[in-house]
Length: 60
Image 1 (cartoon, rainbow, N blue to C red):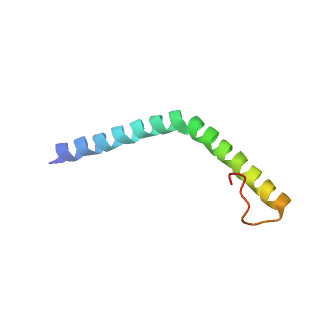
Image 2 (tube, one colour):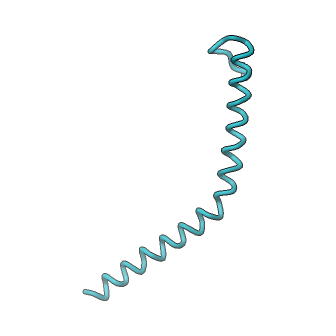
Image 3 (cartoon, helix red, strand yellow):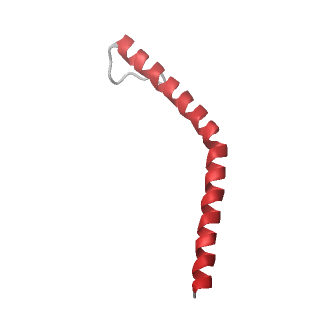
């Protein structure tokens, strides 16, 4: 019974390590995507404030 608990715990630790490594490897991609989305949002906000319309959208 104790052996099964230790194997289960070891499996959970191994999964956590793998998830951590994958997450760290992909974090740069997520930061780049977030910065692109932020710049697009800022452009939309500038466009809306320049036109004076809260419903204005540069995609229209």
